[in-house]
Image (tube, rainbow, N blue to C red):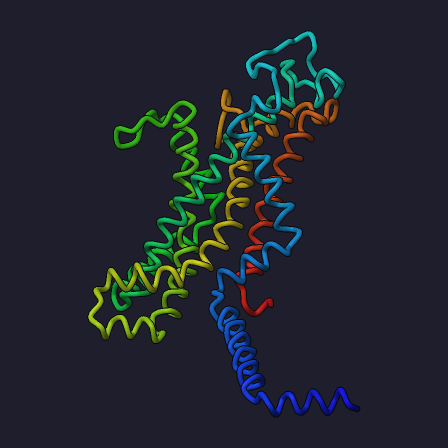
Length: 330
């Protein structure tokens, strides 16, 4: 009782103590609220990604595949061009982990080296589609009017043509062609550029439509109208306000499409009209393993397994990024 009375008397004797502590507490609370309010959608998305186990699993797998594509010597010491016909169609063993193919080549080595062409096609095609589709969608959605109608109708025409069908027709017609507009299309890089060109020409409409709808949603926002009222040029408005706030959906879809383009390249190579020997890719190896499938299924199994895991990793990454950047999912 005495202690309580003494504490109350001390508080009455020094009234400034509570008045000083209360503003300090309120200031700390205000700072915490301000810090929480200042977090952008991107910061929240990255926090969500760090807590998603599928993001880490897919990221580790993608890093491994990228290392295979960039430095295959880290994973195998066999010579890619070495063939031993006396050891053709050997089953997996300690010396040849994945066995050998019909030419006596080490399947593990070819699978590791095949990651380069497959992933290179996927990255180049995805980058080209992102640049072309985003540019046309940005112009269409921001300018509107006749420009929007023209770009949209052209996009509808290309969108109506199936990607694989267009690839079969286009690549079949270029099979014996040595150059286009003076650019050589034969050899390792030439064949890869043929496949990339098909994917870019017939894959941009879907991304253009997505980017157009995002720009149309961003354009009426207050910060865009304020920048226009302050006399900012259209190029500055697009660069500083419209593009950064409209790119998130396109980036998410692009991440998912990367796996789809790797699978599409493997499909065309399997049909014999995409990448062709001596280029080594997973699709080419699956095509090579089709004939001896019943007697030696391991020739087809391992490149198909690597292809499936790579496509799954990119799709998982795209799904994780999509969930992180979608406020409605949190």
